[in-house]
Length: 429
Image 1 (cartoon, one colour):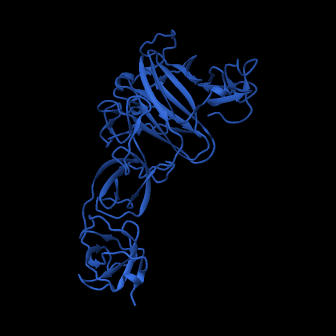
Image 2: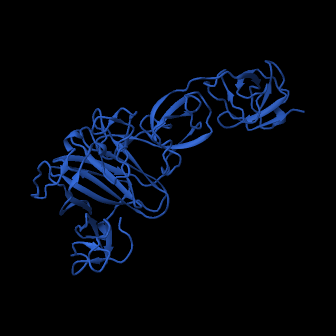
Image 3: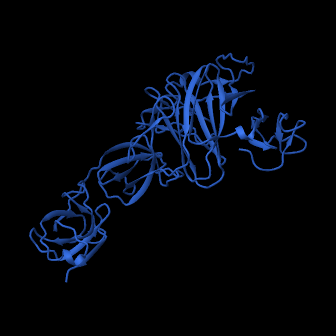
């Protein structure tokens, strides 16, 4: 992205210049990015200034979707205004069923090119060599290159260097022409963008072409502009995408990370980005309330830090029932938790009381279980409806009496308001 400062150009004015430089001798090209002067904005790409645009047409509000179908190949550039709200910017892409296209986003001088899809379990997506990958772009991190997704990537893995382009005519191996989004459509810039697509830049689906999901974190009010590029090097392609405005990701309760699928209670809060389906915008976003296989997962609501972004799988137990396997920041498995343990039985009053004293001396005849070391539950213990940790937890507000045997009068009371965890106890007088 362009950096605020003083620059020099080789022309009568900024609108007519061909390149931008950092020195008065015009020997050091300015970094590629967007630059503006006097109400005019231009992108410098590969050291060449692209067509001038009025600043009023240089960005699209977030929350919009765009579809493109064409016979020509191209490198399609667009700026989105994501405002000053914090949160995760979630983008969805459908690249058609026949020709793969690449995507990369740049926000706050950071490139984003990792994508996942519904049902991705570490075997559903493969790179250009056919090797299974946990997410598309896993071998492409830190390169600044687009990640190419779709149902077929073999026909785009090549170098695109031909510089003799005829408008409206596309030949295999032609360098794609640069396009910039202005107003309501992409406008050809009259310049070419030579590139090479390699195996590691690809992450196609083994069957069909799903909607791919990308997450871009926005952790501060500024900047407000996000640049998105679609690389379509093959002749004749279709792509559709939408970019949502920043919002907090959905949360879910979980255990801490563990190496086994043994059942455990929720003690942590994590976050996930939902996937979507469809073939055109607007896409249909999933409605799951806990992560599914193929969801990106995070430690924060803005999507800035992936959960367990390592190659070693870790398990997170949700609701003491489901073991979610996470590797490289994406869910790769989901199954019932295992290795349940035996719990301690006790009896509780069937009713719940708004004053702790009222629960005392009431008959205890409801069988429950707890995971503590004492005879009766203590603060921090978890209450279950069954005899193993694979059972559902039991929660209640206010106060309930406890006893050792069926028919005992309660001599201890306790509260368990969240996921069955005992928050307080009181000894009856």
